[in-house]
Every structure is written in C-alpha cells, then in structure tokens.
Amino acid sequence: GQSGQQGQQQQRLQETIRRLEQATQAMEQGAQQSGQQQSSSAQAQQGAQRAQEQLQQALNQLAQERQQANQSALADLSNRADQLVQEQAQVQPHLEEALRKALEVMREQQAEGKRTRLPSGLTPEQEREFSELKSKMAEQLRSMEADMQGASRRMRDTQPGASRSLREALSELQQEDVGSRLDTAAEYIRRQAAPYVANSEEGVARALRGLSERLKEAQKLAEQGGGPGGEPSQERLG
Image (cartoon, rainbow, N blue to C red; front, side, top):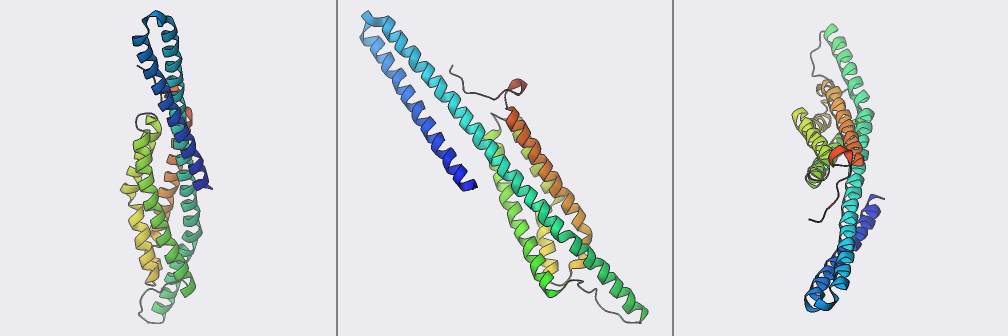
C-alpha cells in the first residue's frame, strides 16, 4: 500500500543521508591528512578527489530519492482526485433525478390546488447514504488540499513546473469553493432538501475533473524533471 511505499522511500532516504555523511567525513579526513603529511601530497589529493566523487554521488542519489518521493506523492494525489470524481459521478445522477421527481410532484400538487414544500425526491436511506458521502468527500478534499500545499513547497526549487501546476489546482479549487459546496450539499440532503443543491452538482463535477487533470499534468512535469530543458535537477558541489 501507500504507507508501505512511503516507509521504503524513507529507508532509502536515510541510507542516502548516511552515505552523504560518510563522504563528508572522508573529505574532512583527507583535508587533515593533506595538512599533516606534506610528503604524500599526491596521495592526499587522490583521497580528497575520491571523497569528493563519493560526496557528489551521494548528493545525486539524494536528489533522485527526493524526485521519486515527489512523484509518488503526486501519484497518490492523482488517485485520490480520481476517486472524488468517481464518487461525484455516483451521487450526481441521483440528486438530479431527485430534482426532477420533486418538480413533478409539485406540478401535480399545484394542479390539485395544493400548496406544499418541495419534496426531497430521495428515500430516507438515500438521504443518509448521500449526505454521508458528500461529508466524506469534503473531508477528503480538505486533506488533499493540505497535501498539495506541502508538495508544492517541496517541489518549488527542484520541480518548479509541477509545483506551479499544484498551486494553480489549489487556486481553482478555492475559486470554485468546492469544499464548501460539498459541505452544503451534505447538509441540504440531510435536511431532506436535496433538490435545492441538484443544480450545482455539474459545477462540482467539472471542478473535480479539472483537479484530476491538473494533478496528471503535475505528474508528467515531475517525471520530465524540473531543471532547464526538462532534465532532472541534481545537487552539485560548488
């Protein structure tokens, strides 16, 4: 699962950091030996060069591990967005059908000279199921937004294109106020007023599809790398 992959990535990252520390220590020891043993300066230079090469390898490995971790995080976000799209597609037709049923009942009642509130158009079981689903979707989206903000910050320097796509996705979510609309839908459905939110369902669906597309775009940019010309950024010694 995702937690297992994250654990493996963390282990690899710790191993890379350990190698980085060892290479740094080797460079420091080489510098000390160079100062203490002037007669073997060529040997000391070779040792320092080897240590520098080891350090560069460790830095490159660290950059690669970070890039892989970022790509894994984006893949997870993309999967979660796809799940929200599927959940919205599951509930949307029922709410739109509830509106049609409610309007039909209202017309019949008006023809009979009756005045009543707009009916729910859903069964009590559907009201419970769909209100819980909408609440869960709102929670999932809030969790995703927090993770997207963190991922965007981590990628800002090494994978700027992917970072920018995440920021744009967050901005679009805020503009569409998707989280609040999901919360509102859950509350209205719970109060037997599902028809009142049915007309906003396509806007929510469109925003979630846009989120999914933005995250897939960020994935592609991260896979291409964040450096000039699409090359992966690497740590470099000065």
